[in-house]
Amino acid sequence: MTQQEAIHRRNGALHIEGVSAASLAETHSTPLYVYSLGALTGAWDAWMAGVAASANPNVKVHVAVKANSNLGVLSLFARLGAGFDIVSGGELRRVLAAGGKASDVVFSGVGKTDAEMSEALQAGVKCFNVESIPELSRLNQAASELGLKAPVALRINPDVDAHTHAYNTTGKKGNKFGIDYGDARAAYAVAAKMGNLQVCGVDCHIGSGITDTAPFIAAADRVLDLVDILEADGIPIAHIDLGGGLGIDYGEGDAPPPTPEFVKTILNHVHRRGPRNVWFEPGRSLTAAAGVLLTKVEYLKPGPVGGKNFCIVDAAMNDLARPAVYGAFHRIEAAQDRAGEAEVYDVVGPVCESGDWLGRARELNVQVGDLLAVRDTGAYSFVMSSNYNTRPRAMEVIVDGDTVHVVRKRETVQQLLAMESVLP
Ligand SMILES: *Cc1c(COP(=O)(O)O)cnc(C)c1O
Image (cartoon, rainbow, N blue to C red; front, side):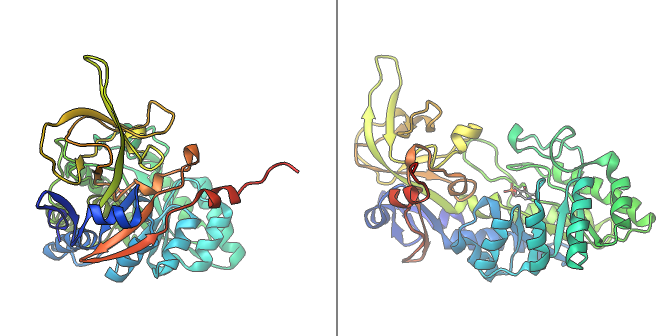
């Protein structure tokens, strides 16, 4: 199912599959994250369609858990046959709790601790994406203490510009991520000599929210150039991992190519240089478009003459941080059409920060008590939420046709306070 099929309007009322936004809000209250099972599945199918249309059948797609780590969402991807890309020990536990297999897990991240390495080694993850020589030494030590061999790929920094948000670009020189391209050959020589490591691949991840295929092609070429050198050095490379990073169309102009075309283009490009096992780690492109954040209008605050009007809603930057953190754009629409004129509003939350906004200068025809939907909030949305201002985190549901599955209960203030204590 496409996003348009899954999240649609019927008689002026927003629906997620067979269920109206209004009935979801009435039953479960707001702020409420709603994910369409059909849209999540459709995004996965689009990746698989690209693989099937390409010349290369040896592809494994790992869902980047950090984009949406809800157990319900992860359990769906596990059933669809996905692998998983994790960046913490906590995410490993989530994958296992959701029914994923450690042997399908790739462990990424620049700051893995000893405890996380040991846990992942004992669980039997299939590859560690290592980002520095000190990390190689630590992993070798952790593996030797357990009498194991750690499978490793080095995350190399291909030094390509992904033309995305500065916080989201990871493959340029001077970035905290990865091993500098010029140092990669020497780092592999070090890894190959360590007794408790098994070199298996080359990894890269150039950024997030990328809407253009060219930087991925450039990165793949850099990776393949390195593979040629390494294999000539006598270090066989079983797979290349091209990371995640494919963006979505948030509706502000920049749209990526359709996923199947994107996947096929990259795979065919790689294949022209020889058969390779290719791994990917997409997050955003699998989950973002499947989600909406439902929020209620609490107040309409007219501005002074010539000033801004504010639409104050019950979701805030603690629920959805992307606008505050990245200046990110999300479409916002009223869940029910109304007769009358639209006004221009800044849509803001109740948190005591001027950075607490969800959308600026939006045309909305709403009244107090109406429901708004913040679109494309299936990735980097709930997962980045916090309890700032002692706001319990939102609830999450997955809609499948006419059925609503509660996949995260609404947090209570009592639960928040239970973590703390007053002084004796
Ligand atoms: C965040 C991340 C991803 C997923 O990125 P998307 O832009 O969501 O596809 C994949 N791999 C690594 C190492 C990451 O840090």
